[in-house]
Image (cartoon, rainbow, N blue to C red):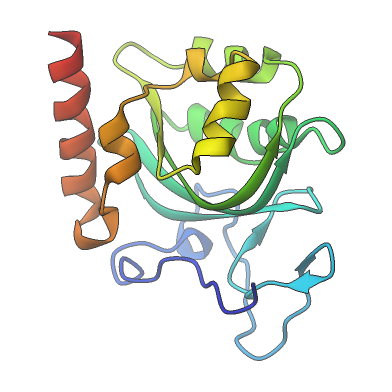
Length: 189
């Protein structure tokens, strides 16, 4: 797992550690020392800790004018033991919401497992989105989506099979948002 680095191609446009409004503003990262781990597996030092021992994130891009944020995940999303959704909501999402972000892209291809519990934090997050806001999971593994579905979490996300087949790395962040919104509008029509 230590070789899985957060997506880096947009770093010339945005870094959370340089964004004064970001929850990770001012963070410094080592390229040499691997100190964070998920269970007994070290992870790349560029991932950000959100007070969960099994789930780390990276805010890849945030545009306050357009109101969107793209967040990549790694690890095990465990609401049962670690209440990861609460940690994510309090440590990251609430801060972004307070700055006017109402569109969230969650990249989940490196989420290996999901253990869902209650849906109250998902419901709260969804209810706090301003008009036109959404939460879109991209490239989540099938068994993770099934766990979310069994626990009614997908009720709060925009779901479309095209989101799980998306080659988002080839797009610029603004283009990714345009593609997602086009898919959402087509579904609504």
